[in-house]
Length: 76
Image (cartoon, rainbow, N blue to C red; front, side, top):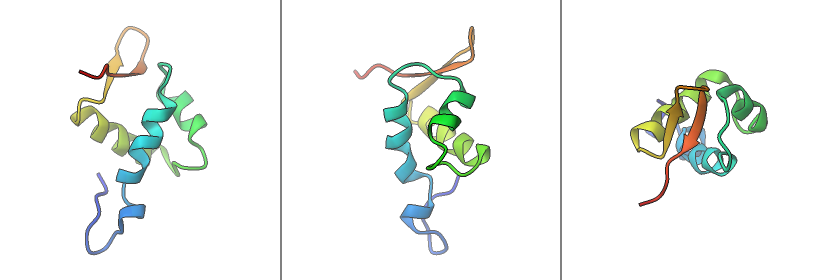
């Protein structure tokens, strides 16, 4: 996961992409659909996976294993 540090600025890290991914997840989507929808923001599938790992660790998203779609968690 690329986090801001001495070598990478905040804008180069995964953090500014997290809210954009959450906005895109107004409806459940597969990772492929998500990457296609964020094509000008996310540069590679690896970058998307880093962002999704971060969102999953923060309990913002879940994976529906039945159909492979990423679902935004309900706010408490």
